[in-house]
Length: 343
Image 1 (tube, one colour):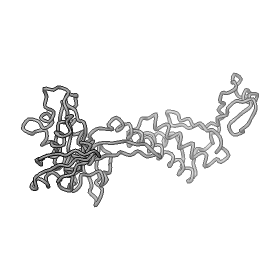
Image 2 (image 1 turned 90 degrees about the vertical axis):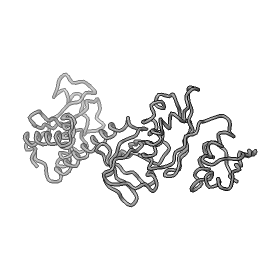
Image 3 (image 1 turned 180 degrees about the vertical axis):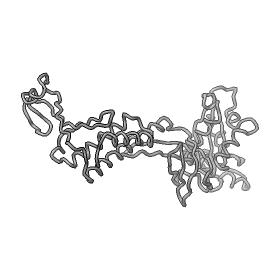
Image 4 (image 1 turned 135 degrees about the horizontal axis):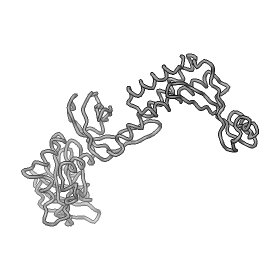
């Protein structure tokens, strides 16, 4: 593989256009690739610090960088002051002297060319990874629009702003049918950078997803006029939300439900029909539990010393109080802080 000016310029232009990279970034990648290939062909310089210079016309120069010292400890990277001044009279201790070691023919062997290509590929991958991280790091904790591009038995593959992301089974709404081509929202829980990889943790099954939807469609919530105190959710079945208002004249439940239920209907459509109950957060535990157990009608409540509460309902109301899969009583217990038993 011959490295002449034209081939270097062509490589730079190709990388700039194909990967939409900054020319300076491309030049750094090219330098690293040449350095890697050079050390393969010239093993005597493997421990040396090599500097590669690429001119605008693609001309390559390779230098060995030596640090000027009083006493040599590492021959591959150091040079005595007296010897350095034979090359450059004004050089001082601690400075670097560049010795031109450019070979007469800048032609890499097959193995060296492979090493150079691998280094360049890795450099591009690193830049793309950082670009990916920069793109999403400010979107953590937000809703993202996604398009379903593939549906497997367990996972759903999404396209999010040109990036392929997996929605794992535990983060899906249970029993929701996902269809290729449909557009959905997901909540970006976390973006993590570990061991050379970047991962987007997205979900539709967490309470955070519901809260993010409400933040999007209820401006009074975004502005702090009404608040969400706590959310309990059994994804795919039911969500109960304790809400409050910073203004006593404003009904927080009414704000979240919206005029003629327009806001709650939007929420229900995004949750694929999952039941959603808004309950005003109040200090009276008896009244709070009564509201949380709706749609069941509670006849009486008996509070016990061990944090347990017995709710008495008519026989016809038991299934409503408990809920399908016990989700109603489970969420009422979770939000009230009491262990509720229905009799």
